[in-house]
Image (cartoon, rainbow, N blue to C red):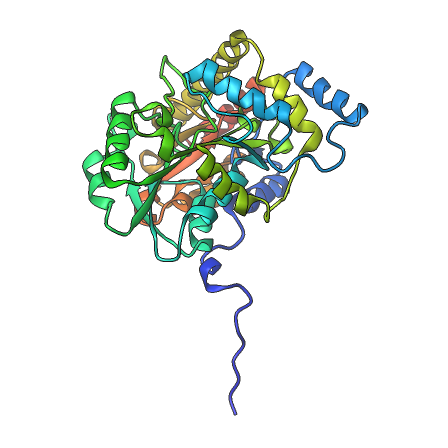
Length: 393
């Protein structure tokens, strides 16, 4: 008599184990290394925003379940932000949904809008939750790979068009792009919008780094293009913009039918979250333009500091036009396996990074690339750069 043991993890998630971020953060802790792997700041954001959260707690606002769509103050602030920054008007009551960070917003959108067998075209490399959420929805991901060209990673629009088939339901777009730091240009976005309209596709856009664009680059929401507002679910969050990543406050803006669909899935994920922090983020969204300008300038200076150190250490460094991250090529160092390189780096140099291959379906395409986060204090980045110089050939 024979017996078999059924795997505990369902087949849709069988390819997903412990995330690389957990592995590398544990390695940083064990070795005492500087952790430039996971994208979180090592300082808190504006004091007035933190005090707004404390005030909400003390005043008893949000200590119990907040409304399912989010507190009215935050929904109103999100709508005002979208209009002030981009000229996009949304009804705070029917076209804004607050989520437990952008990660939940992505999950809820994909679970709500996809049927088993649908195809999702996504820009590779991509944030690891994209692949997992597409799998949980029973859909199939179709990667379109961003490739190095002229010192940055670029989207091949012909390849994007060729990836769309009769089974394609949705485009999943991320700009500013994690992990490559690419910011899609107005011309590239116009071509994406034209394709979506022509093929009648839904679009989910992850814009969490909307306020972190450098060197005069411009972030243009896809929903601003002709024919796109009615088919686009725009996602953003407070964590990256205000340096409170632990608060987990994100949001969706979209037409009523799409928001209702996303909310139908979201209500069975966290239901609600982050009550007092929602009130604080509402105040954060009203910060003056000078805050965003100073924030960008500070982060750009940190980018330049780390990029200079990486170049001196022998890496090829790709221009990061946005986000928290720099992507490097390790081949000038005589290396080609990003996984092996990152697992050895703490012992070699006392620094932790992330192998970009984890963000690829085509692992070979991402094998020689390694991502470093520069959202740390300047003195930490300087120490990391000094340590990395040990690698110089």
